Length: 84
Image (tube, rainbow, N blue to C red; front, side, top):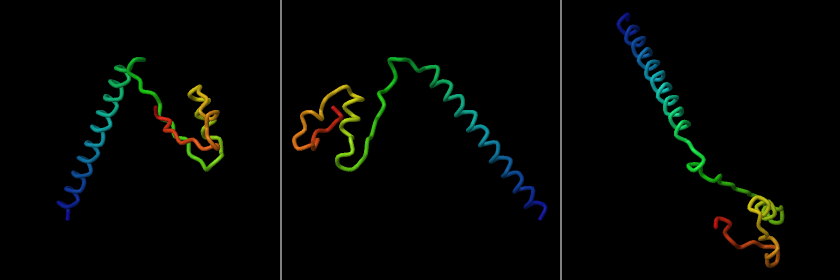
């Protein structure tokens, strides 16, 4: 019984140690990533606008992209992929 308790305690200690080591590695990696970051290395954000018909999705995208896709829509339906 005592051996089982000792083994459980040892397992808990090992688990806690592994968690602490993992946390330390993650923090170090995050610091390294932040240090290596530059303006030229940043990616453009990905934006998803979801909604039902005629809720202003195209108008929002037009404002963000500074375009006027909405003006050229036939029947108010945008059938163009906005990822270009």
